[in-house]
Length: 89
Image (cartoon, rainbow, N blue to C red; front, side):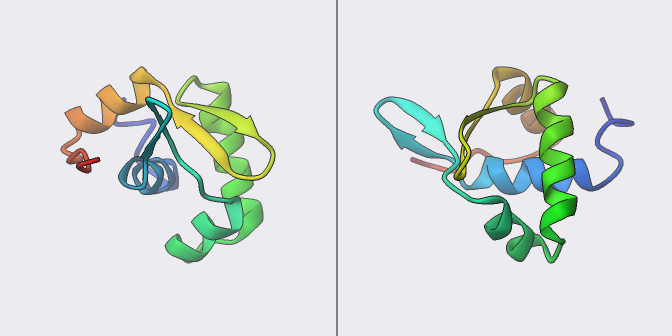
C-alpha cells in the first residue's frame, strides 16, 4: 500500500477524502479535475491521469463526467490507516 501512495496519487486521493460531503446518504466528492488540480497546484492532465489510475485500481468511482466521485471503502480504509482524519459531516 505504501508503495502505491509514495507519489502524487496519495495527494489526489487525500484531497478528495477531505472534501467528501453527504448527499442522499452517500459520501461524494463534487470536485472537477480542474478544481483538484488548482487545489494541489497540479496540471489538469496530471490529475486526469491519476484519477484514471485510482479508478482502475478500485479507489474511486466516477458517477458523472463533470466531477462527482465516491471513494470506495478500500480508499477510505487505506487513508485512515495512513493517518488521514475523517471530516465531520
